[in-house]
Length: 133
Image (cartoon, rainbow, N blue to C red; front, side, top):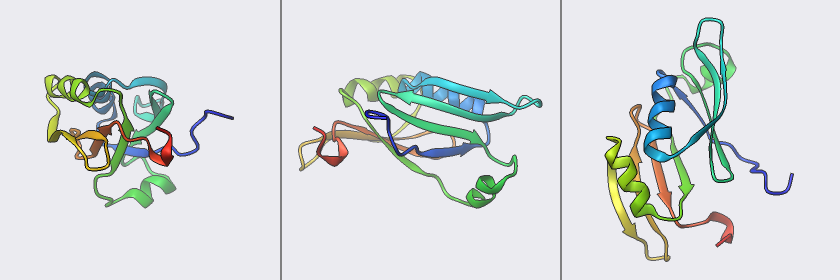
């Protein structure tokens, strides 16, 4: 499994189709997998960006994970991008709330912060955790 990520952030949304639309349009994610239930509710989706994946599901459908996440606040996810300025402009054009515009950091990276429609905070920048660049 060389090259396959071993951690996958998982977010639950009240409006998964809306979230998938926003995350693909604004941030450039691609829907890699989507499983819908018989009632049309999104049971599970995976959004790919580079070699990373974020798993997405519906809030309020029951089950142990949904129960454990009940009452949880927004989550934060960091994604490595090559050009934070261009990426931020795409998100801004799509109507995403930009919390902090692209900024140079003391440790040499450049990044920005955005909030999605359901309150999750997304960081996009050039820093690669683990010393991978």
